[in-house]
Image (cartoon, rainbow, N blue to C red; front, side):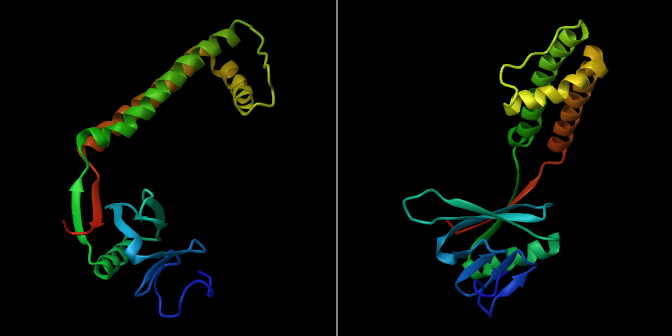
Length: 191
């Protein structure tokens, strides 16, 4: 953290966060958040970070600032100090089944769609169709140009096997995530 930005009486947690009597300093060089602007703080219990939700103006929706620490113990100490400083109540709860399974399911669906399209492209490349690009400088065209040699090497069957393994991995990830749902920690004002 820069010396000009952060006061001398700052309690520091790694180089990620500094706390004073009036503000939280997120570093390096990301600025200060006054305590009266903080609406809540959220973290997943087994992660190394937390997110501070704060308002820049009363009529605007809350913004978020993510703070990443080197270890969970440092993150927990910072959360405890922040809860004491703000007078916020700490709550822990498990994600619901739908919310827990949503991310793996969504990524698996995208993987299945990409696999289907890739199988079709690999089948066309395998029978000898030429690949033409209308706009070869387009980022999407460059990505496909990189995939064409892979399609030639694997063929449609290989692409299908790799895609199915990816989708299967997403299903396993979803099942494990539902079995061991993440615990969310929130700091917020008492209601």
